[in-house]
Image (cartoon, rainbow, N blue to C red; front, side, top):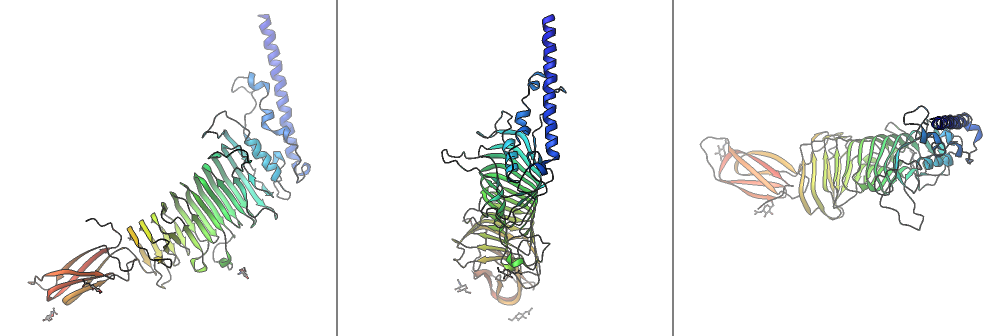
Length: 491
Ligand SMILES: *[C@@H]1O[C@H](CO)[C@@H](O)[C@H](O)[C@H]1NC(C)=O
Ligand SMILES: *[C@@H]1O[C@H](CO)[C@@H](O)[C@H](O)[C@H]1NC(C)=O
Ligand SMILES: *[C@@H]1O[C@H](CO)[C@@H](O)[C@H](O)[C@H]1NC(C)=O
């Protein structure tokens, strides 16, 4: 009994001492925070080791105190930028400090892994604390990789000597040359509530060989290359964000000089949802499969100035869905589209869809249930660029049920009628059909306008997008015709 009591006494003394140590460390942290601006020069002296959680948390008390005990140290995994000496006023270079914050956040461990080889960082947060930081080098995440981490809550701006081929935040590992990189380096990294300003040098965010990345509520401006680049990996979700090379509300006098790509998707299975792109030569460039764009409002650079809202550069295997988007004076371009769905979108200001022939293939394309509005200049809502050769392999193309105001309807499905008194009736579908000289399927009905006549009649000619019906005797009649350019014919 007595021995046990002594042990307990010693133990509690030890716990008390340990919590004192923790308390002392924490007070150093707060002193440092108060004086960061004065104590750190922009070269970032390495005085941060006091404040690393990895040094604070494994105190003896954590092994002794039961979970939930007030004596247990806080197991916070929030890494605060200013604690590491980053300058939230943006006057001095915060690159080194921010790289240290990120490096420490990547040292946290939950002793679990996500995908094989990717450490679960347990939800660690890199908190920018509402600061606006200037950086001269990319915030490249550690090559050791990791996941389940958030970077949030502040602004980053590139210095005037920032490398023009890099990004403010890079989810990309550089091999040290000795060992090959794993297939995926990062998983479940969230970048949110950020304002990124590459200062017309390089880009905003690059996401390379990463899985399940979330970019949420970011404002990215002044990029020279890409606002966001996604390459390899899959499932980068970009949502509720605003991207524009120049800060403008539209009608900018310098619009024809806009350059750069707001979102460049060079990978598969990504989603861009509820995003506004307000300047840049190309809004969204897609060169990977199975991407979804929804609720994207593009007014980046008008087609008239040479801009493109959404450019699908994956001829032969497009597999892209574009729904509920708002193409505002800037359109969609698709090279040899194969499996492409565009619906429930609004095209304003003569914006149109251009299919560009590369090898003449168009297969599995739906452009349905959209609205087009223009200036009455007769611009076609869907157009073909056959400068590199005609579309020769056209199959399963459905362009139908779109409505127009001040533009010219183009479709692959059409209905028409003609009235006359005679033996021949012709309905010319050239004003509406998209493809020249292509009707795969035609149906007609001949309705005589006098009672008592039952003429023999037949479909005589379907060529040049014209349908000719003839009867054996002259008769006043209305002829109704329905044609389809895109349907698969079965014998
Ligand atoms: C666009 O850029 C050209 C040269 O690149 C320059 O001469 C012109 O002034 C610019 N336009 C506007 C409106 O700034
Ligand atoms: C149709 O044309 C024929 C002669 O070709 C004529 O006899 C007939 O009255 C015409 N019918 C009508 C309704 O105009
Ligand atoms: C169908 O019409 C086209 C031009 O209108 C003509 O060249 C062609 O010979 C016609 N075909 C038949 C079977 O009459």
